[in-house]
Image 1 (cartoon, rainbow, N blue to C red):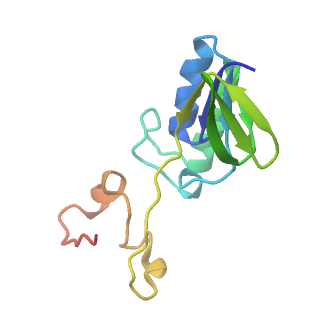
Image 2: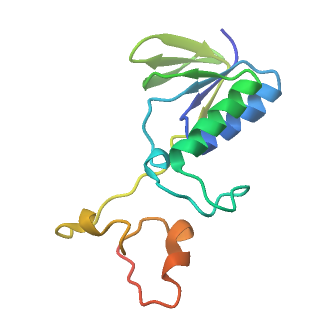
Image 3: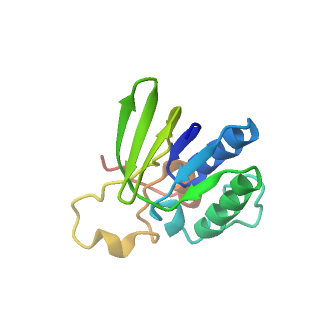
Amino acid sequence: MSGVAIIGGGPTGLNAAIYTARADRRTLVFDDGGGTTRDVDTMENVYGFPDGVTGPELVDLGREHARKYGAEIVEEEVVRIEPEGERYRVETTVDEYVVDGVILATGADYERPAIADVETYEGHGVSYCVECDAYFYRDSPVAVVG
């Protein structure tokens, strides 16, 4: 099979899928169901959503948009990618795929600071995304750890 494998089914991977599928490339989006976007209750800084959107809604809309142009969502976890001549072998927990190109869109992760019970304060003063959350803390004293 030729085409493009996009590793990651969050906003970046799905946006890439829209473009590759519109360019008439067979597009496989590998999505294992994880990702930080799916954990967000409300995102108020996403273009086109003046009243905000939940992370799961944003991912669902992105999937629908990518599928509109022919992208295939493969709900499998990628465990290995290896070059195979001028192509790539993508191995998942279920199957193997050979593609012409690979786009890595695996997202970002954060590391909790070693502070007792810090998870209790996540979303109530403790944040991990400056771009996303600085708005809520303007004109307030803040500390940056890390």
